[in-house]
Amino acid sequence: MSMKIMYDIYCFSLKEWVLYLGAALAGFTMLSLLLYDSLWPFVVFPAVLFFYLRMVRQWCVEKQKKGLLHAFVPAMEAFVVALRAGYSAESALKECCRDMKKLAGEQDLMVRELVYMESQMGVSVPLEKLFLDLAERSGVEDIQEFARVFAAGKRRGGELDKILNLTVRHMKQKQETEKDILAEIASRRMEQNVMSLVPLGILLYLRWTSPEYMQVFYTTAAGKIMMTGCLFLYLLSWFWGRHITAIRV
Image 1 (cartoon, rainbow, N blue to C red):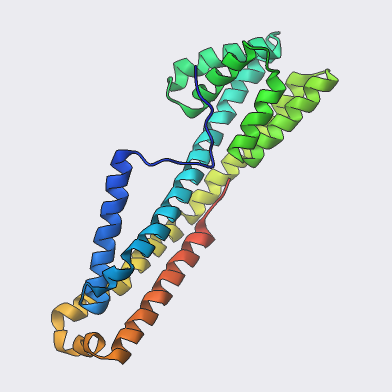
Image 2 (cartoon, rainbow, N blue to C red):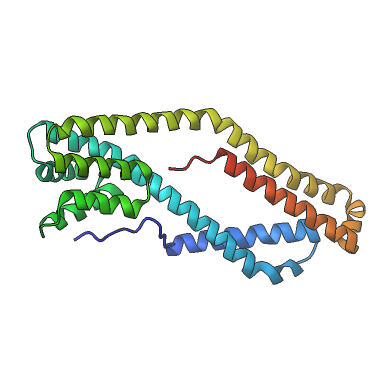
């Protein structure tokens, strides 16, 4: 039986732990040597690592939710097709589950959800309750909207397939709009990534070509304070750039 997935929680795999810890260690070492020519900043490394892993985990949660939403729309298209073919909602979900297994495989997030929902229907849990449960666990607005529409349509009866078809079409249009926006800002994201490397490249170039010019920043209190201020502004601009170009589900 498939287990419930809590989409606001993300557990790193061993491979991810090694990758993210290695990246944090390498990045912090590089910044310590570039900005301070010393490894003494490692005294604050545990605190920095805590916030870094927290940020990465949040990024993974958002990525997981987007992956669920992108799998949810085609699954619900198959669900609506089965409804229009004359299946009941419960039978349509089972048919949808079989189709999605063939298309996406057993490990796909939405397939796992469909398997879980099918198993719960076997113990008499109403389908509308299962959709509402998925909506609550996912925290994704479009899935929550679909679940509310389905629950209302199931209670009132009538042309459920037509109502759900309109809802799925609306969700698909939103995804297409998001793709267009991503295509438009792709160059801006690339520019941000390049510009983020430029200050570090300039600093590395100055250290390589004029080490005596840079010594004042590493040997005096004023120089260290200035470097710390530059680091703060650099991180602030990087986070602000990521915030501007982010698209949340």
